[in-house]
Picture 1 (tube, rainbow, N blue to C red):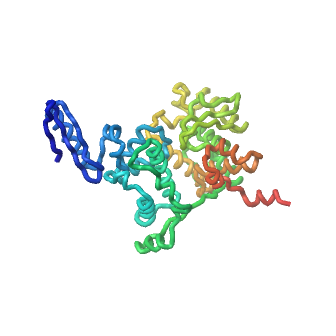
Picture 2: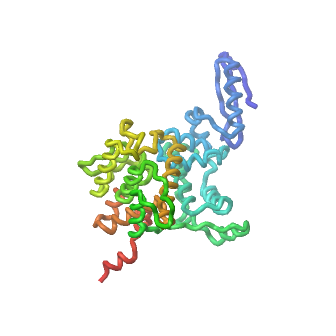
Picture 3: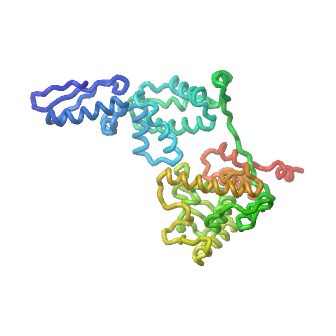
Length: 386
């Protein structure tokens, strides 16, 4: 319970103590006892739940816990959706852990927990660590006395890879350790031809009917745009008509996964597919019934909401629909995201662009990550040899 006393000036002083959340007693002053009782009662309820109110974070940076740092960072910094999703998953995990207790041993312990208790894939561990590391970078730059250095930046290379000890700890639980899965799935020419025929409305062989194609012209254009531009699914279906510049053969993306803006050049194939699609909508193609460009949206599946759950729902539905198309085409192992792999690989195969130039097209900020997408076929490489 907080202690309170009336000062000679007539104001009321309250002293609040909470070990593990407040590094030192917090002194608050109010004009009246009634005002102080109401505020402190609410404050103590939040502290009991391990939550430090934002107004205290603003006033006393030395009072920030890990959870408060995450909340403050998400409030004050414009984050890409990927980081926001990861940090939202971490909110509440360290509600009462002070930043003063964040050191290298804490960082190592967290990584060990993700491997031995949560049994996460190394790539997932790196995503979580990367998102929180960027949050801690912001805290350090803010000059908080509670966190002078970022211990997550001190983790060694391959920190997310399961060691022999990690593996043994996981197997004791009758579970298997996770390994990185580097997808190298390519859309082979024969399978691509079948996919195009199905998208054109042809019934797959050995099937009584083909998959249902809602807004078929839009599905055709989305497929062509994906395989010609290397854009991510969400980057495409959230496009507005005004973002496509036919004369300059570019698409301007102002909201991407990593938060940066970029211009994506379009091939003549993509431009032709765009024009065919626009004609279908404007000519009131029956298969696009109910959709028009009045709202500015390029595709019909998205209502313009930026709510993460809405976006995730659209992504799931489109992924499922294309999954059924690929399955009907006999290449069910291919996913829609593999089209980004395919498009990136074709940039390497069909152009003389440098890694940096290709990264500007695809939006990769890490060249190592880009190389995971450039899955060049061994047979194609062999043809270039003497």
